[in-house]
Length: 563
Image (tube, rainbow, N blue to C red):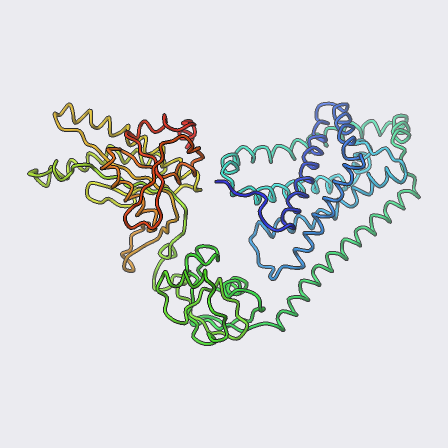
């Protein structure tokens, strides 16, 4: 899955860049502290190396601009939020982010500010002695954990849609636990050592002279600066909250009333889509495609107030036409009410019509495999029904384990054929699993044909079509008797590709979409263009005479094995 990592507004990109700068600083800072677990010299040497970067004029500018930008954008996002309803991970990250300045301000004032103004030697020993005798050491340890957890959550939210991130998460979790543990161990080890030295009156004087320890008046100045900085933070936070609630109050005065048939009546601010209004007020409202105007599951019938709505956009009109929606039907994700409405939700996620939630379907982009046995009718002509069933069951017993072992599920059996779907966590792994399954099916069939040869029975030949596209997985059928299945254009394409294998004398036709999703370069492959019956656009696919030879045709066969 090739997810654009820098997509979004300039504010989003600036938040990511500033966050990465701060995360890198925190990472090396924690590693630096952890070196105290081994030797003081290691700790001080790395701190000196870090300071050549962070205390340089350019390094300082980058670091503090990143800090100001990241904190400022966080406050702006709070001020601009239309609702405080949010996912748990988002709320946790915001809360942790707001806790950071409460200790970070004191830390910066007692180190960097003290160094710049009073020429304090703010080595790690000075910082530890400053905190060790009181609760400050525990508060700074807590700050370290908060900063690290906040950064890890942000990194995960940013990278979670990439395929490589999902694959490395188990290892990164270990790293995420190790870094703060290593830093805390180093802090405690160095803290005990240096505090024992500081307890010696002669060594204490040497330490005070070495660090140019601030006097009472200087500490008073530092405390005053810390208090003023904290006050500025509280004022900025209060201003952000005041802007948020003030805007909410203003918008409420410029709000619109929406009544749901068989549901509550709510008042929401103008400018939001009907779907956003439902979500902001906790109203169950199905939207399988996430509000992109594609699945139409958020559609409503406007019983009152339809005339006040603008006409459907091209996207909305096309989607409504595709499902044959009646008049007064609109997509909740596309309309922005400005006058009172009364609406009826066509689909309800709370089990309407005595259906389970799964009956409404789930949209996924997955690989599907269509398989059919060649010459089945000629082969079974004149045989008893029992013999036919016995052959089919032996055939499926031989090949289906190859599908399930690679993460596939047989969606349905169709006489001498089957349809399988590879419902893995993401599109890329689905494509890789499907390719691996096609190879394994061919191997399993070869072994099965060896058994048939020993029984003096003719070998079985198959055709397979493999494609990847948008599917809807859900329960289809009468209430209480609905089977879970898949529908979508991808199923039809896979079926048509399988049909083309007959004329080509190939065992497999795999579409270019599958190869690209699996991460393979298609340049140099014998791709052909197929105009398939019932499919509007031509499909590019690779014919493979024997599927077990597929790994030799592709440039990186080890990627399939990894699937």
